[in-house]
Image 1 (cartoon, helix red, strand yellow):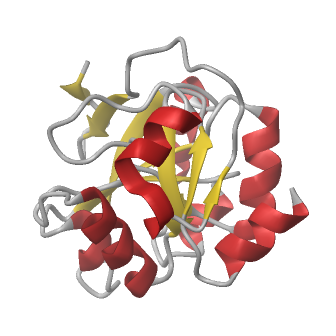
Image 2 (cartoon, rainbow, N blue to C red):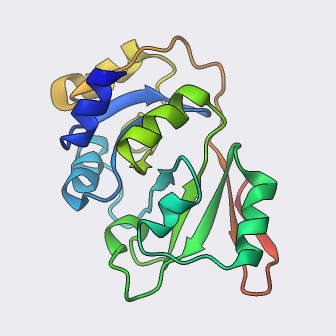
Image 3 (cartoon, helix red, strand yellow):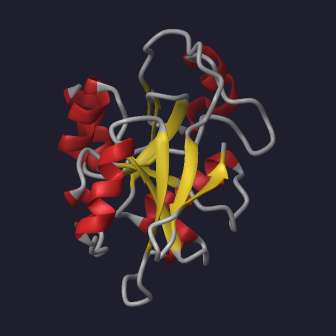
Length: 182
């Protein structure tokens, strides 16, 4: 764990198993790292990414303030396989994460090892480990075929039997829940 933490904290990119799929991860607070992940994945530059966090205060560390009502809603879904889009005020420069959508999708994963890593590194962007348009890697060998030495670290946690990305929801100003991705 120490090695991967050091690599990520120093601006590296890793492929790890999340609570949903294998993901390619890096520091969410570092625009250079986020841009690097987009380049490695050949990801559509207008498509936002999901940010994994260890707790609700990680959202506030990015400059987004949450109401008490919103906090209560997150408690219904987290930890778990649901990403929640949270509006990012214009005054907070997170365009490199939300790509003009005005909101960032966050998730507290239901995986204790991953939570420990997130506590050490802070928020991580975590798109699936695959080039745009290809199937997500089910294991480290597949990820290595996709990315080779463009990734700084591969963490092998076995075969990924889940083939489904997280559900994505948006909470409206009236606190209604809209499903963005099932």
